[in-house]
Length: 232
Image 1 (cartoon, rainbow, N blue to C red):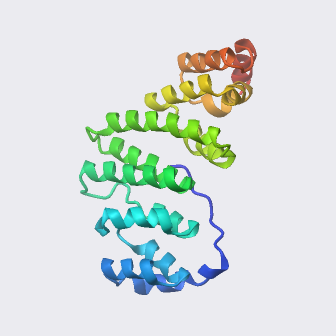
Image 2: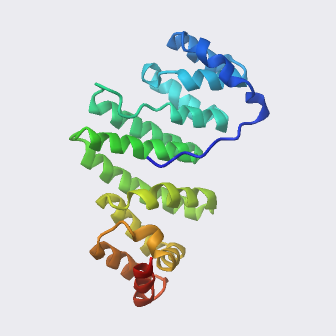
Image 3: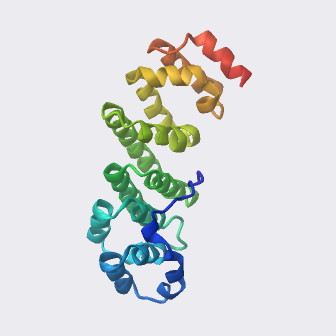
């Protein structure tokens, strides 16, 4: 799983760790009440220990929409991944939650947890895995188009960092990526100018295909980009 960046919290969350030990002894309804009505540092502490599997989906969806960014990040980090003995349907559920969270907030933590949940399906050989990767590949192409259209440069960079640089070896993500190269000249130029950053883990056939698509859609000529890739 890609490493999450260290958070710098606003001053109102100072001391939130002081509540953690005591909050671990609270019931889920008590923790939900803290998130709903507590002060900022108490809300953050409650989110750091809560079992989201015991929280109603409608409540989680409300929190995704309404919590401040620091707390929404903690919520994303609370998404269970590879929980022992959980059915595969649980991982599918958390993929949906993380997808909803990213669509609503554009926080990279949701993106990271989405793909971690996909990896959990693979790790447990869940039969839902292939279909979920395909579905998220389609979604990724759509959300990237919306991000580019909206001029959301930071979100575009997050997708490059947390998805393109880690998951292009998955066929559905590579297919979505190539579609984005065709639709977005800026990405075609970026890939052909920095091919090793994106394509180094791929086999030669896919490397060639991606660079050919980039060259045909505004990137550097194939031979130039291919030589750069060989140099690393």
